[in-house]
Image (cartoon, one colour):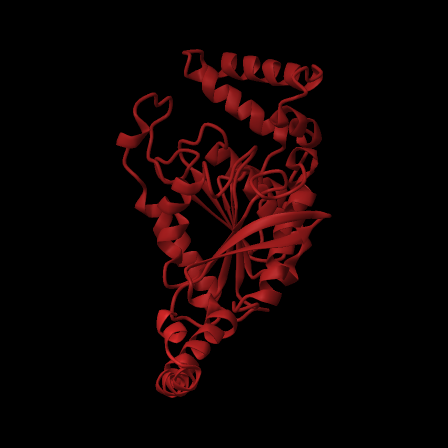
Amino acid sequence: METIVLMPSSQSKVCSKIFALKFLPLFLLSLIFIQNELYGMQYEEKTIAFQFESNGDLLAGSLRLPKDMQHPPLLVFMPGSGNSSYRTNYKGYLDATLHTLVADRYALLNFDKPGIGKSSGAWWDMDFEALAKNAVDAIRYAKENFPIDPQKIGVIGHSQGGWLVQIIAGTYPDEIQFGISMAGSVTTVFEQDVQNAYSKIRCEGLDSLQAMERAVSEVYKLYTTPTIRAEKKNDLHYRVIKGYDPTRAIRNIQRPVLFLFGENDPLVHAQSSVDKLKAIFKGDPPSLIQWKILEGTDHSLYRIKENCFDGDVKKVPTSQELHKVMGNFIHKQFTLDRP
């Protein structure tokens, strides 16, 4: 700038032309690079933030894409109950489970429920069908806007998210290829609450019969007593979902679904869940329905803990069986031709 001010105007024009000729090729290359970044290579980045509309709300999501892979299969994850988010309380969980499977192989889509993070709305006012529709709308947005394989999409949900997987696999089969329900209950909300209460009471030392009687009594009281703490979102949501029964959704499943249960899960009892699955189909589940009880694992499915564990979670071993079982199932589904 100082040189241009000091030199005569004629000399300035000559120098400007020389500068332009000298650096024009570099300038053009820069434009090409910027254009590629904006329009052709923007998906080389590891993570893409986006927003999409669902049920009248604007939801915020994030897409991880493997580098140097064109149109990868897509996995969509749904966390558990309450204020759960892939950015906060589920961050470590995803690192320990799905992220080890996703790197360099699959795209992974996460999004926040209505009312969490940058997502508008109120998840505590929504039933499971509406929450499942959020995930479906995220899938549809991804198909239209991201370089993923639209024929190879799987949905994965943990805990309460497992209920959503069951709904999607039956109500929106054309949108997905398969689903994985991780520690997702196959019972009613009431039965799941009884199982959870029973586990806690048993750990107090009561025998099985006493524990079951007390658990049923406590949960029944919870169901019949009006919620006083109306300002708590979990209580508000409980009013909406407490009558939910997944039986119809499971019977309607039209895509392969893998049900994963933890052997020592205090919230979703593994063997009784398998028995319930069989009972739903009168002892003869279709080949679309698969299940696996992961040895020694708790509700997380990757921590190996005995019943009534009260030690340091950071010191417990992790399950390699989860990675193997889930990885093999995902690979098999993505290599099959979609019906």
